[in-house]
Length: 342
Image: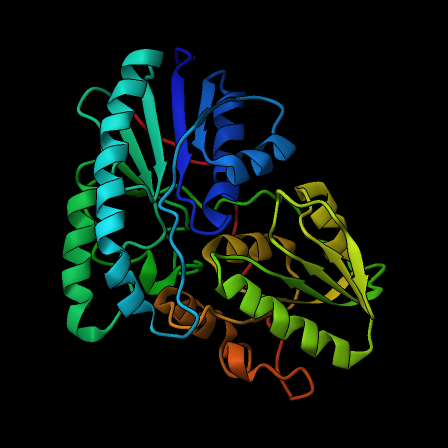
């Protein structure tokens, strides 16, 4: 048996997906007898404490990125880059202090570039090995990302290595030497039942502001038109005020058990094509229609990959009265996680 280790896990704070996909990693490591400490902000901590009955927590600032109101994501990220780079440098220094203070044996960073150290093994979790972007800069982005990846002992890709995978070009081809596939990560481990489907639409909101709220306003407008029984999951773990808007039941946040029950009752799902949502839906096997965040090339690629024709809509063109499609995602074998960090 592997000697118990003290492990520090810190996910990126852009939306909740990076945090939720760390849950199965933490559960597997806890099962193996390791001690887990999470470096998170208050929103992330609120989510994790609802899901897990183990683990320690230490405050750890995120990147606090704001998305643009329009679709000019590239320009907005360029403006935000000095703040991001500053935070990467500061989190790297903070990590060295935490390692000395808590005697950690292993670091797991979900898409946080600064959380590497020469003192102990460090694993970097990302599904986006080949960053999607304008053709003129894709090779440049891959080179920059590779420099960060190569500072870690391991790079764990949460996808299948086979042709039947979820990430497509994002997670396959042109891999760096320290990369390995660990299989998809999901909070769920079985299909959602379809015996009692009394909810016509389940809309799941996610991602940074102001786009989360922009999406919410459009979804409320469209769901009202249907007159059918609908549910919105707001993506706000720090809020707990459930309420009703005409034919819509609104929940700011649901834990995994509650969300599974709602999924079982839902005929159709509408959500962002965030990679963590895609991993969850590949297990749950509920028909989904994707609405990518405007200007976010990764989500636009995944929407096109899995939604195909009419299986996804641009946010400002969503019209539930149109002939839109709902797709089942590939059902990926989710075997035991291959978390190799020696």
